[in-house]
Image 1 (cartoon, helix red, strand yellow):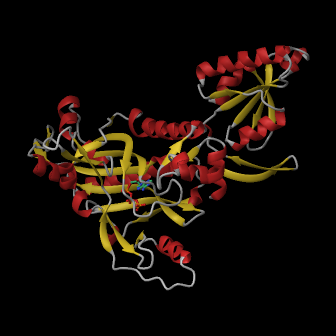
Image 2 (spheres, helix red, strand yellow; image 1 turned 120 degrees about the vertical axis):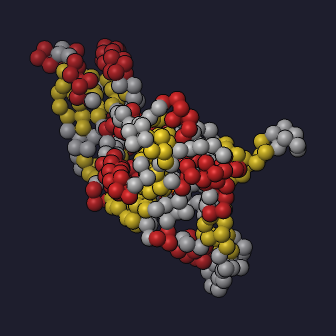
Image 3 (tube, helix red, strand yellow; image 1 turned 90 degrees about the vertical axis):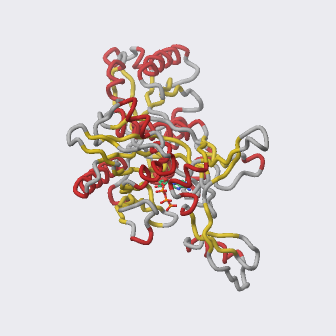
Length: 438
Ligand code: ATP
């Protein structure tokens, strides 16, 4: 983990939030490469869960919502974690995280640490809006993006006239006043989620069918981020562990090097909890009329919910590889090509030969029109450039040499295409490059 954290800072993936002011616990900023990686993961979610389907709509709800929304959803009362306080130094720690407790106790060498009884601590982040005392209203930064979809259920029905079953998905920031933010991007106080709420008829058989369907769909999607199958597993939540809204809940877990199996993604059977509660609290009718069966009902919701930043972290941990290439030790990021921040780098063999540089620029411009995340690099010698690109996970490097210019007429207008993982190079025609990189 430490190696990945330090690579992330050194190579411009992820920085501690507001670092020059001492940082803010549980808050991180994304640099130029991190933001591309995160964008590619989000785009992959959006394509597979929304754009490529006929039965899921996309939307984007606001972060600020009136406190009443969170009373309706049950978060004001139930969105809590157990908190204990160290009687020696009064630091507060999450009671159900043995690693956090152990870490804290190890700070008090030789002292006997006693803890207070656990109390429930609410994770919602509160704020106020309004220009005068009188007009001030309580708002919450959303603790999950889910409620933004449910409160727009009627708007989507009235504007899009969807036929059940159908889903609504979005990506966006969520905020939780986590008691013990820790493990880099794993437990943050500000993070991003990607979710769909899939509305179905309120029926046990339908519920089971769609729950299984979305479990499988989410599994295939997560594997598609480039994970080895043995590093992922499913785990069903025990009854006492389920969130207040969940009729059934399964997580996809990743085998982390820092704490073993940890939640990456959740599939939750929320039944009619959210729509029913919002109907009651808002006095709006959030039922659905089924033209086919001529029935009116409050649909059930099967939710797929993943953390974007957790996906970024797990992808980085999975991709980090150390090996030996050509007798030299190296570390590199073995990203799946479709999520790599830089898809390919284009080099002139030598920086001081204008004819090589001009041709390399030409190839770069041609590719960049089709594949935007292509990079031009002529810094240092070619070996150094390969190492640099390997370290940030660029799947392919393209080198323009004298044969490209026709020194060997048989090889005119061909380039070398180097594979990050094997270091092997093949000669490829410039006109075939685009297809090779897709
Ligand atoms: P945990 O048990 O780890 O606290 P959770 O069960 O509360 O997570 P959900 O409410 O199901 O999490 O949120 C859905 C997804 O959002 C999680 O699978 C996870 O990927 C992500 N997530 C939740 N909390 C955080 C956090 N503090 N930092 C980063 N990602 C988070």
